Image (cartoon, rainbow, N blue to C red; front, top):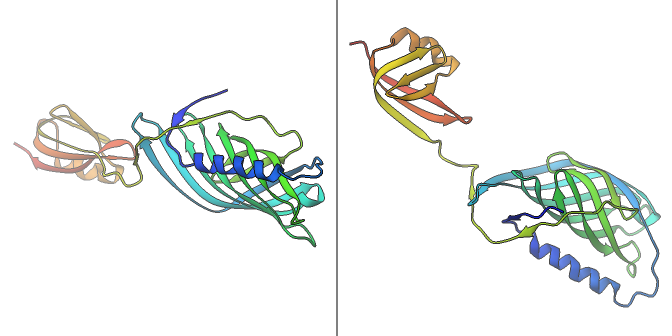
Length: 247
């Protein structure tokens, strides 16, 4: 069982589902096993990422996924799932909360809310709601392979769903990486190395973008005194400006 501490917004939903399931059992006069399998592909999704104070990358994705469920009559038909996943992509664990609806032919839709644990591409947890009969409650284990950007595969509601892991959610700070300003650096001095894709000045080495290479090589040569400015682009410290020239 894996256990990891990270910031997430799923704890309240997980507790709410547990409470709803408990109320769903109250007053039950009969029970029977039901099961279904399902797949659902991503329709629309949106994601954002941030970095926690302990250096973990958290990706939060909201999406809507559609597909088909097959199994007991109350669980057979087109299925639509909404999902909000909060995943520590550094360690591959997180939580997914959402709702599912199955369009049962000729009957009221089956509906459930779910909270599951995400562990390296797989989810497992609990779903609770109602079947098409207004008086029938639905409580079931739910598992699937899940990719927030593509959807659910090998999904199961009941029917021997795979056991899940556990995560621990704690408060913390998470700084957005989506709109970070690029890291910048600069140096003044003599060019000690200059090749088609790289320049070094006063100990600072920066990559030269292919589109700028010919122009830089035409105007500058080793031992020229220059001033260079560089910025982090696609995780590579890249030359953005050079001035100065021949002795």
